[in-house]
Image (cartoon, rainbow, N blue to C red):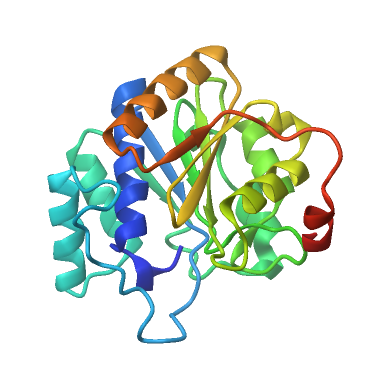
Length: 247
């Protein structure tokens, strides 16, 4: 997560999806693992702000909230707590007092996540780019870090991880295959994903009831935004030559 992007169209999708799932699945705890990074390198970044027609556009309350934050020069991730709290969703912004995410202390960052805030919760891990495949930087999350959170969270929690689509260099299909083929088996066997033309969200769960609720909720969400692509398939078998080259 980067505050310079707070309130853009990707955030509209992200926060609308979280609100939709929380209401549909009866989960009133949202834990946001921000992995907050430093200032943007270019002033032109973070300017995807035309909400109309984007995923989440039907949520007029969220659109207004994000638009007010951007226009009021208040692009700060902690503001989203105000929005969710007003919707009856208790929100924990993890790492908001720690400054920027530091690769040197990343183990402590994830190990310090208290079990209390990932108990019957929607847990969203938000690296700037997504999963680490080759070399880990501050913009990546490690598969081992996601697995550790997954193991500690309660059975009635849902874990979501952000993945940026590196278009036009990597196709969505290639990115999904690459991630799933490198995902530990404990995660991969209980996973779904949802994407639009910009981002992919990977969902991980433990309990069959959470799985059933999630599938129903995502199918309904896709019906509302038909351009979304949803799949429950995991990739098995041999890793393709294309994926090997990207590892």
